[in-house]
Image (cartoon, rainbow, N blue to C red):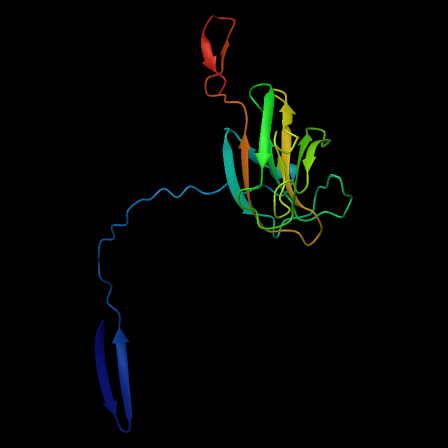
Length: 186
């Protein structure tokens, strides 16, 4: 940067002129995987394509689009939605217990938006899970569409959550075609 001064009667002027300097910037490329925040509705649900899955986000600022009675019938809270099409018949375990910061409610809807599993407050701190431990793991059918909804117990219950989902491993599943070749289902 160059500075120049001009002197006039009773007034000191300072003018600054910026000179662009060509400097190489060598910033390392760092992989920062983004957590996969759920979508606002089933139409914008975040797809889960690999299990196990872990994601985090917030329900703050999202709509109150869904609700399930489990066991209380209070007006719901802002919710987010994930979608999953299992590759095999099996059981899912879904938990919000690792690091959720509000009174959660967790439920799974089938493609017709019918509640097939729901839990409210299994873990300490009024946090929810659908697992063998809670007595409600989620039985799923291969090729069927499911929606996993992260919700709150009452209208004021919203905040940050971490969701963990475990289930069948499709990385080794294969299907034989009518031509005798093998293709991966994953």
